[in-house]
Image (cartoon, rainbow, N blue to C red; front, side, top):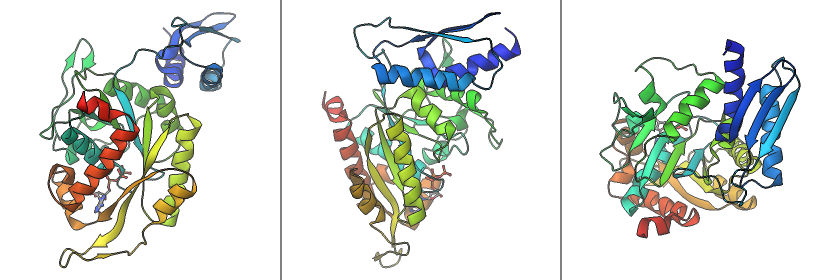
Length: 332
Ligand SMILES: Nc1ncnc2c1ncn2[C@@H]1O[C@H](COP(=O)(O)OP(=O)(O)OP(=O)(O)O)[C@@H](O)[C@H]1O
């Protein structure tokens, strides 16, 4: 395979995921076969558009795209655990903190949940879940998730990179590494909480299209700017046909470490109002507290403990479970 062909294949895989049945670069034609079983017409059209877009910048002989429906019965393709994606419009709003704590709270409810840190720019889950420095083993070319003391097996881009090394993933490379994290040996895990990279660019869109999350949770701070960004994040999931489970407002209200009084230096309620205006569910509000930061930095997710913050995460997780149909999974 020439290097060019590898690049084209990577781009195709990033766009089509396991829907790419075959690809052949001939002299007179570029033949791409897509597996479209279980997709409706709109889904098929979107897939083809994504594939055409992915190879647009390559100088190729004319494209010949064939669609085949091996699973012609309309059943969805066989896949692993269901995916709950956690996204945000911009960085630093606490998306990773909220993802980790939702996963821990779900595990406490009895959901068989795993955590994937897809944040290629700054993977922080190993620190949050006290699994820094772990290296996942592999079996039959599949990664085996790292166990954590919170009953949530996990995999992170941070586990794949050397500690302290900056990660400069290019799109297709990131897509392939992420695929390894999701398509891992998850055992009896039936739900994956996936902490997406912050923002709403192409990397995020490609990931969402490729891994087709079953639902999305949006994390936002109360500030206006963050809210506008959150709106963009919602738009991104809408565009990809991923149902938005709801919005979590983080860093809402400051809880004084001395007297426990809650004040609102950045305002609060903005995310709730915006979510409701747009017709999305509001899942809850997490205050800004020193304890959340210090405990998180020390690898102790507040949701694993007791107290008001743990209760709030439990409440958010309960709603996520209900809305994503995980409750039956937990009680089954
Ligand atoms: N409710 C909170 N109270 C206090 N500190 C918080 C809260 N939520 C998050 N933090 C702190 O804010 C910082 C950023 O949080 P986090 O890494 O979860 O954000 P993120 O949106 O995932 O960021 P990034 O874009 O870097 O991935 C961390 O130091 C975290 O401990």
